[in-house]
Length: 391
Image (tube, rainbow, N blue to C red; front, side, top):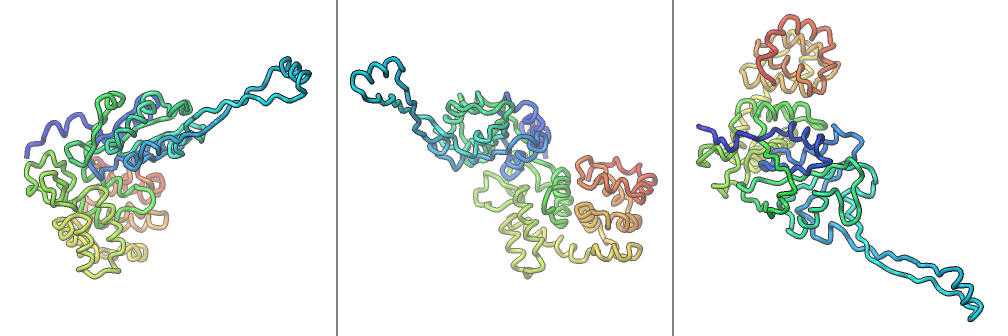
């Protein structure tokens, strides 16, 4: 199928967008515009990693009303009387003249904007396109001048925003004079291999290897709907021409499916299938169950630790991918040497997949694995295979 040029050219991946925000965000307000569930909101901690001294401030614009941006605060000025005048008054009436009190209104910003910290902040205006028009207007000075009311953000503060594609039809609208204050960045969807790399290296709970294996074998689940003319040509993804499809595959729903599969031993097959269908859609939910069957037959970590020379081997390519992804995601000092011994028994494709995963600069255990004598021996023998593509 021919790709829609408008959806494939002049789009950034998330990493490049984050770099642009970190470099230019104190002077320019970027608007990240992309598909639902594709990681726009996840960029805030990514920018924070580049600028660790900044405070991260998440603002959900879709939940704000005008009064939530700033609230009135009554202040006063006490104007004292001139000493010469007071002396004359004292002689005439022997009475203290009260100072003149002048009251005025200031506006206190919502704490979500972080101005009260008085240090540089990174403000993400999430779902700005879904905000009330009054809220968008109230934030225009923040986007243009880094100022809310009379309160200016500390020097070096960054402001950026996110919104969905208008073609998704989920209610994102902005007036042109607001748009003109923004630099739009159209985000492309991550492909399956980029998403797998993220899933292996994400902080906290890793993505279940069943989901990673399914993503490896089914790149079509990451397709952009603009490239699919008829909804029935790709039953996995969101498509605005099929409003009945309320469950579908996004990066976000795949992560939710991972949580479900982490607890799969507590559900019967029927319940597990229903949960996956309700998260990923009927087609994908049923399809991924075939990988659940494969996963239940995979070698266990304990078997590799105990006897890597005799631990069971995967029987097909899909199972091999899940073994490699699981090993990369769960790697530690105890496991690395036994797994390298086990890896010697796997296919060259599996060796190349593992080597590429370890050599990736983002891999969380990169230094630990590469400094292990067993891996160094492996790299010297199989290094020619490490350039065949990323994990």
